[in-house]
Image 1 (spheres, rainbow, N blue to C red):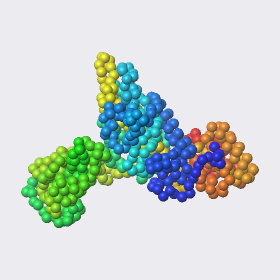
Image 2: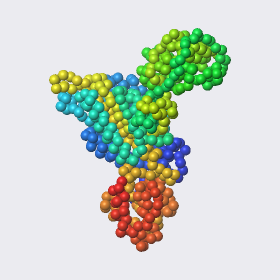
Image 3: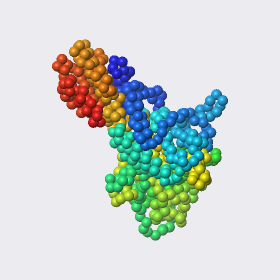
Image 4: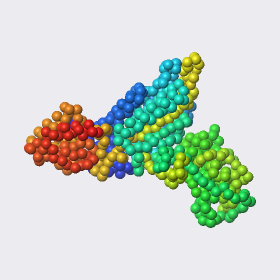
Length: 573
C-alpha cells in the first residue's frame, strides 16, 4: 500500500479527551475515530490490526475444535425472558422495537441465542460435546464509557460456547479453552495474568479472567509471589485476624458531638480503628417498596460492593447509596451515627463474620452525636452473617501461603465461565443419555475482547514517539520510506524494493509522499510498523538503512542482502 493513497489522518496534538496512552495513540495514528461517546469507527490501519487479532482467535479456536458461526446482533425479547434475564440484565442492555412493536435487544452477549439455536437440534449424547464460536459486534449501554475502546458501548468480541453431557465434560472443555486463550494472548505478545473472577450476570460457579497488565487498567488484581493465588479485587478473599479476647461488658452510651468519621472517632475515644464497626447503608425498591440493605464491617476496612450485592442477591444497578432521608428513617439519627442496635422500618442487615467473634465493639448509637461502646453480636444485635464482605488491600494475607497479597492494575481481555446448567435448565435444553433418559446439558461461555486487545497491546507496546506493534498484529510488517521522491534514483530503488517485497507476500507500506523527511519519520514512529527501510542518499550505491521500530538503530545494508534480512526477521517473530 502506498501512503500517498492510504487514508491515515494522523494528529500532531494529543486529543484533550483522551485519558490514557492507547486512546491517545490510536487517535493520533489515525486508527480510530470517535462517533459518539463510547462508539468508535476503525480506520484502515486500525481495522487491519483488528483483523489480525481476529485471525489469531480464529486459528486457535479452530485448533481447539470449536466451529465458527455468525449469529445476529438483534435478539428477541422472548429468548431473554425464557432465561429470566430480560428484566435483570439491567440498563446496559440496548432495547428496541420493530414496526410491529415486537421487542428486541442489541446483543450484549449470546448465551440465550446459542442455547436456543442448538437445543432443538441436539437430542442425543452422541452429539456431544459441541463447541461453537463467533466474532461479532456487541452492544452495552455503559453508564460511563471511558479509556477509548477499553470501556465502549459498541465493541468487537469473540465469544464461544461449549455444550457437554456432564460436569466432568464441561471442566474438560473449560481446560481446553483456557489453553487456547493462553496461546491467543501469547501470540499477541501480551503480558497477562490469569485470575479468579466474579461470575456476575453471567452466572455459573467458576470463572477466570485474563488480565493484560497495565498501570492504567481499570481493573485491580490481587496476587501472591509466594503461591499461585490471583484474583480480581471483586473476588479476592480477605484473610483478617481479629482480637477475640476479653469478656462481654455492659453497653455504654458515649457522647461524641460532631464525630462522624471512623478516623475522628478512633482519635476521640483513643482506641484502634479495628475495634470499631461501621455501617454502610444502601437502598433498593422491591415490588415498589423501599428497603434498606445494610453492611456492617470492621471500621478499619472498606466494603466490597460486589461481595455485598452478591450476598443480598441484588444487581448493582438496582441499588443506590442511601439518601440522608433514608438513613434518618432507618436509624432515627443524622448520618455518621448509624449502628446495628434498634433499627427501624424495612431493612436487611448483613454482618461480616469477623465481627461476630470480636468483643465489645464501638458502634453508632442511632442517636445524633452519640456512639455505643461494648456492643456484641448475638447479645445486642443480629443479622445475616457473611464470611467475607471486605475489599482486599495491599499486604493482606495470601490465602494459600504464608506470604502476602500485592495489588496491580490491568485490562480484562478475556474471560471464561463454567455456566453449568444455569441456561440449559432455564431454556429447557436436554439430551437423551445412554439409557434414554433426559439430562440437562452442561455449558461453558468464553469471551475475548477483540477491540480491547487492540488497546491493551498499545498500552504495553509504545514509547514517547508512538506505537510499537508486535509483528503478529501489525497492520503492515514493513515500511519503506523514500526520503526524497523527487530524486529518481531513490524513487526507482524504493519502487523496486516495494514490488519485490510485495511479490514475496511481505505486507509492505511505501511512503512515497511528497512530505519533508521529518514528517515521514515521525509518522513512521507513530504508526509503529515493526520493520523499516529508508531509501536515501546512498541509493545510488544500492545501500539502504534498516531499522526496527523497537530498537530504532539504523544499519546500512546492501540491497542484495536486505530481502533475506527482512524475511529472517519476520520468520523469527
